[in-house]
Amino acid sequence: MEDMNELLLVEDDPRDVRLTVQVIQTNYPKCKIEVVRDGEEALDFLFCRGPFSNRSQTRPPKLVLLDLKLPKVDGLQVLREVKTSPETKAIPVVVLTSSREEKDMVESYRLGVNSYIQKPVDFENFQATIKALGLYWLSVNQSPPEKSFTEE
Image (cartoon, rainbow, N blue to C red; front, side, top):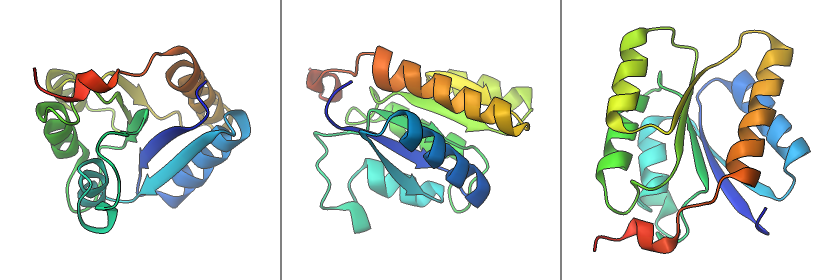
């Protein structure tokens, strides 16, 4: 794992935020976790706007964990904007949602999501899922090179 990985957690449920952050910090202590609580804030973070205008577009998060049912801008709209922009389309996005609706899964994959995970309701399964997710995306998977974020 690189010295510092950044993960963006887009989640409005405080319990899910707390548990996800706890599991990631316990298992991947070098990972910096940014938490945003609605879709508008997620887009501001990813596109370095508003309160996040001091972020560098050249250092995108290694992974975005995205809930679908969000206030202000829903997760599918966030995914649509991220995956259609040359500056962000290479960022891996994992939908982590309680939605059991097939249409959400179909639309997420059509928009280019890298993975779609239904949140386990059970505490131990949720922990195990987040730990496995972190192992793959933060330790095993190779991050897209910087060239991936520019148009040729």
